[in-house]
Image (cartoon, rainbow, N blue to C red; front, top):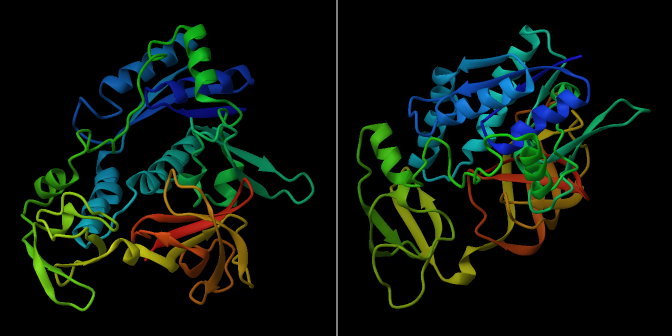
Length: 357
């Protein structure tokens, strides 16, 4: 069987390539050129490391120029969401549109049976039903199932995740033993196209415009002061608000249309409910009844008990990608943030998820 290996130049995807090869796959390495900044793009210095690892493993290597679709699908969406007062997760959008969209299509064009990535998660297939499940990686510190909640049964059937049973330390040890050039490379902590972490500056530069100041208001709508532009704020923020209020104030809501930010006390950023859109259920079927499960609201957050109630809007389809759901938590949750993902879990199994409204 043939496998296309998505190689970023980091240690994880390099070890995934090696393990897929050891498992007997006829492997082809590749990296995605996503934008022009040679210091940050995967086709820059990271791409060189990916090519070096592929050469060491004796596998063919391709660079796919995906700059235009990445700009259109990921960067444009990031800027649009932030400009509207939401806080998006571009890594999830990139996984959905680039890695498991266009790159999976490239794998099929090359006659590959599997797409291999370095995510710390596991794909398990039920031998009786043939249904595929996505499960957490065994290393809780590295589990990346949260960013893969959108995968369909078809995508899961062609996905190989060799690192799901490993810890990061084990992966680095394997890379060092293999003599990979990137065995000690530190992990990236920022969004790939914003390597300095300055989101506001990137958005202003990319959009080609400034984001004007507007009103800070209290929960009753009374003006409290002036903010410096909505792209500088996110829900739950209480530091770097730009002015002092005498008592701690927290961002409770951001209204992009009115260019207004609502502030409240620390207790006002807690909520028992949330609605999500674009729900994807990993089984391919939208539940007919409310689902009792745990929900994770951020990548590194601990899951919380809740009831998820699917809402009308999806119909009786096998690949539901446009539905809505309402989440009711057992306990109030802090800073439920529009634009982030809410992911549903049954133990270590991902049930699905959606984007918080």
